[in-house]
Image 1 (cartoon, rainbow, N blue to C red):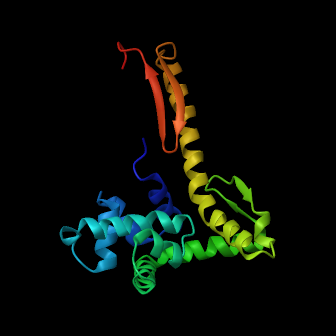
Image 2 (image 1 turned 180 degrees about the vertical axis):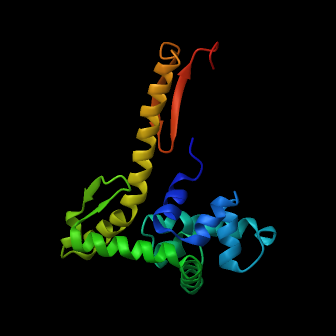
Length: 191
């Protein structure tokens, strides 16, 4: 099970120093982001602040705008707008990266994962605003979520090779992948 893989990938791809530093220090990413956005120490972050930071941390990777943020946070539009602006002011490297991904997708018609796998988005050329907006959201997320998928698949290949090398392939089997985790079944004697 990879810990906060999508947020770590977003930090890595965006090269946002504040975001990267949170992971280097081993902090709770949602509490640390809340502390940055609300201008308080990590110790002063409340459950509600952490929850709001978690909402935007995951939301921005899915192209969430102010209206969706408002709905998900259960606040008025002005509060959501301020939170959104404060977030991107503090994490300007992430904001610049997301803008660059969107611009590249509009220009090229596709995005790429870190490993070079492409995803094309025909909807970016649609004359229908809701189809274009949906394609933009998917394009923003694709490099992050796609890189996550690539990493998990690479891990599965390495696990299979490790099990063969250690002669455990008769006792341990990869059952499935669920998002950022790999589920294995093992005989109790080797678990």
